[in-house]
Length: 223
Image (cartoon, rainbow, N blue to C red; front, side, top):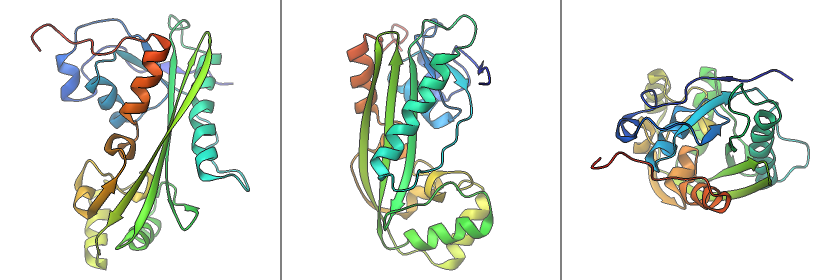
C-alpha cells in the first residue's frame, strides 16, 4: 500500500470560504484531491488536511449503483485511515464518491474529446441520476451516507457540446460536466442535493461529523 501524503492542512488553497476560517489545526483528513470537496468542507467550517491514495474505482460486475458509490467512498477513507500521513494518525478520515448514471450505465469521467461529447449528447434533454456517497472512518468504526439526486438537462446541440468540451471544464468530471461551473446552464431542473451533485452532500456530511463529534462551523469571530 502506498503511503499518502498531506497536501495542506490550513486555509488558503480551497477558495473564498477558506479565507473566513481561523488558523485552526485540521480536525479531519479528506481522502480526495477535489477542490470542490475542499470548498464545501470550508463552507461548513471544517479545518482539514488532504491525503490522497489511489484506489481502483471500477464498478464491479452486477454491482448496484448505490452499492458502488458507497463501497468506493468507504474504500477511499479506509485506505487513508490504514496508513495515515505522519502526524495525522488520530484524525477521522472522510471519503466520498460521486457517479452519474443514466439507463443503468455509469458514465465515468471523460478524458478524451469523443467520450466527453458522447456523454453530453446522451444527457441532453433527459434526466439522469447523480449518486454521491460519503463515508467517515474513525478509531471507533465507520459510517456511510448516500445522497441521491435527479438532474434534468435541456436540449444541447452539437456546437454547444463542442464549445463546452473546449472550455476544459468537463474533463475528468463525473458525467462530463460541472454543475457549479459553466455546465450550470444545461441544468433545467435539479431534485435533491446541489452539494451532492457537486461531490460532497453537506446534509449527510454534517450528520456524519456530528455523530462522531467532529466540530464544524469553526470560523473567525466576526467573519
